[in-house]
Length: 124
Image (cartoon, rainbow, N blue to C red; front, side):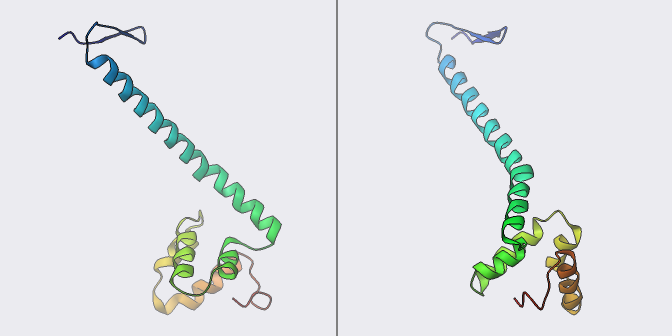
């Protein structure tokens, strides 16, 4: 059975070749996956940060405050807060998820200072 050949970016067709249609499907699948990866990269690195910035300006609250005000206390809120902290670009926020229990109060104060959260206005 003859093998398909690529010449000048085009697939040379062989009559009766099984590989002709399967290579086209593979290339289509690879291109689709690449396009999805590029879109996800762009979204995660640019659009998400822009969306958070716009939400901060519109609501006057940081993402942690929005989570605390919009989610009932419990495991769901805790998981959302941990995810937000881990995904932050600030090293202080990223490391605050795995801080020693003795340093929790100091870490909370540091986060509130970094995020400019006033404890008197925002008790949660």
